[in-house]
Length: 360
Image: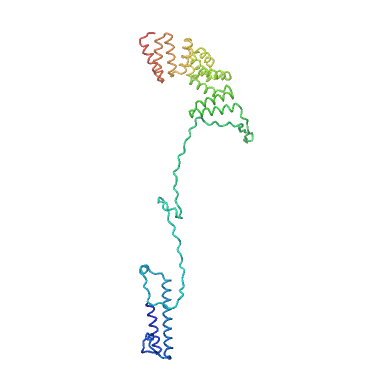
């Protein structure tokens, strides 16, 4: 309304400066007193100017009210209703204000998930990693042997070439032997025995597969089966000491000490440098009733290995059965000076207790 009052004051000032009706206020022209036709024309002109000025003032106020954003304090108060209203419709320009972009909701980890109507992204829960289950196989997986292997060949000019070689039965047997060792390390004894038998079927008489299978059979109590495969291997390798010594142990288990003494005596040259050979040979001769040969074998072993306790124990046992108690007591006393297994140590203590009061 301050803008309307300012316009009215401007009109009154303009009339005073023009000298028209200076003694009459400008608003008195609005009265409905009868006037002459000559004075009615200027009155209508003044009234029209007043109406136009009011309309312009109202339009400018509405424009400023619409375009200029209202302050927060003024928006809370209700706008007063204007007492003066324009008599004609005024087209008020409408200015399109920019629409702010929609706010994107922030995603907070651990917060509750939004409602199904929300279009914002949703954080998916991360599943905990599963522990890999261990599968225990009853038997090891046997890889198929390759039909061909590649071997390297060195030439005179320094070149090294590789060529394919067919997988022979001997190579297949070696492959089965390696797989049998791996099976034993994994605790699969039955699978190992089957692989060893397959290796011997491919190449009969192989030393290492025969020794391993025979030892497993002796452990299982099948001394007869062990003797059979050892006999086949000894026919292919008659000078192999390891086969002869294992065969002698099998003969002692099957109550054939004479056969054990005979097979060991034939390998004296190759077994002379081993203490266990002399101990086994003396035990086989003593059980076969060959006390004189057993004493010679034990004495020869002690001469070569004087710090070997089992040889002294064997000599004392042979002297005891031959009736030489005093010499046997000296042999047992000497055996105590060296490392003995718990079984032999207990046996020596018993023999010394029995021979403490015996004479020569």
